[in-house]
Image 1: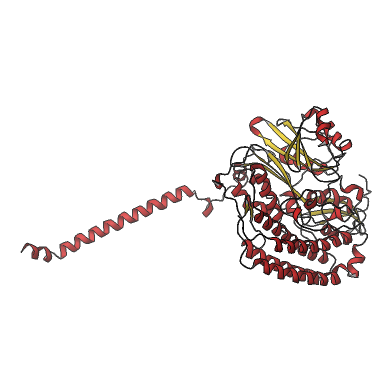
Image 2: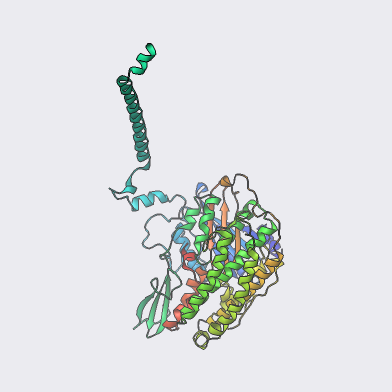
Length: 202
Length: 371
């Protein structure tokens, strides 16, 4: 592929991942200039998507720009890593208008800042004041429980484990009671009808 | 602000509006009947699929990906299955590939019939939706027979498909295609050649051809501007490289051009399905046996897959981290860019009555925008 030699001149390596999929990794400082080179020099005029992945354990976000040429016969993933704390990326909306909405979504879902972006407003979440929800340290269960507490006196407010324990104990007690009753009944019957035993003795 | 918004009134087109294509809203600033500014709002159906999926295994996530786009679940299933296959190196049999291609084309036809109902209904042609929704139901019968589900199928699993074809299925599908071929002639006379539709749609919602590729407009929006591109031809997947079909295009870039492209694509889908019926292998494994599929581990790697849905190219980014859970899955459907970048621009200086028609012609599916 011709692109590979062009990137080699920039000291970057192009890796083929699938038949139609290639990947190049670049550091943040060179990202903007590389994307501009892809657009203006290499002919990758379409920005298909911007993807973000939270690598919480390593402390960074992995950002992937997917680009296509006019022929649309392959996709190149341009990948970079940014620090999770005070995450910030250059905005691409001036050269690819669709980046405006993609970056707005990423800002809302991951908290990545885009200095110079004109509309970093709500996307799908209205008046959201919590941690950006697609960060991996966002605890969905804790958030749901804090925002929607169970109402008292309702069936779904019961603790399932406790209820199961109570049920098991009740069942056990009922079984013991039934056994005891059966024993008492058998003893009473034996007292009332001693004739069989007398006959045996005779 | 570019537009002069003095003396304008503001109305919200949706989310409670029969002309809207789903749970979204377009905020319109009107001067008389003319739109001076349009702003898209979503968030009425945010179900957090991407968050749900990152805590789930492949088997658990498989059952929810189809719900990302209600009228068109199968391209989602295909993308998900193919992304997992790419990451793990799973190979699927030729028969499974043929079946998956068949399901995608069946889905394309079903989606087109539903679109036709929406498009005709948006300009007051009330009869067409009644016919086309009924005709779509015949395809849903076939889906029910094949997969057990009418709308959501959960059929294309990583490694193949879940069930084999029922006895006599291909004959019944062939009969349905005969019926559809006759019906498309009827739709052509009553809808596509209808003077009302032509007068309303020609010259409305014209997309600038120069913007198409740079702004990532896809599907009929792209092909309606004369750009002959289709993922099935450009980056063939499954059995598309073994099938003979054309990519219909139109030059005008308006609502009518997009409708005609869709009509021609329906005929191409029928053509593809006829070839599949002929070429379908009698024998073959339908689902590759995966050891410990409940604890199926994805390697620490990422991939990007693209499928041509009935509304344009739909892409998935997927990453694994060596565990059983999917690290990240991001959905990029055609609706995001069409509903924001394109629609907001396209509606300016058009009439209020054309909003629903323009939205329908772009194939916007709001559940897919916010996931």
